[in-house]
Image (cartoon, rainbow, N blue to C red):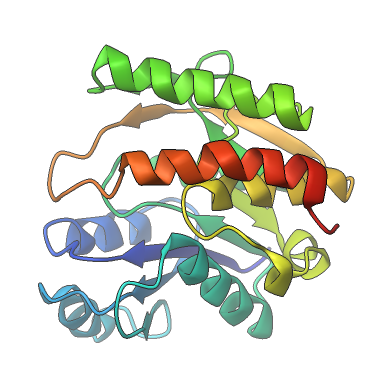
Length: 237
């Protein structure tokens, strides 16, 4: 049985973090949690440290000063995980847009042959809940655009709910990952694909956050739009 680590970046997630931690630790498979907090002023890190007493050796926190970006939080977490011998390493949001119960299905996909499993909104069986139609269309066609430019056989190219076998993160040169915003998720899949790793999509129901504030913006989408062209023609593999 491998060691499983779920990495959750946080910034002002006090309304969600305790419930998320408890939900993950109640799952039928064993997962450890690493919270990477970017100096949340709302007390998110303090709540995690309080809960560490309840979950010794299973709940970990890395605190960083200031908002340094989603991609840098995951890269920090990946290096932390590799240095400590985890076998399966997960990315997940704290806001319950990703259902923690699906961690078990992502793990199962990687235990049965996938190198990367992706919680997918747009493969057969995948769904989106609570989103206005405009945002659904923007997200869906963003993924179509990425597939056309990068020739990558993944329907949900922008998904941020994933499981990696450790060999994937060992093979991808993490210090060369260029994009740290929305395009980070695309670049990680593209790098894994170009290295020949098997990517499997697992259908999920994606639910927009109920508590807290979304970090999405048009600036993030612009980075992804331009970043995909840079990846296609200039990425150093």
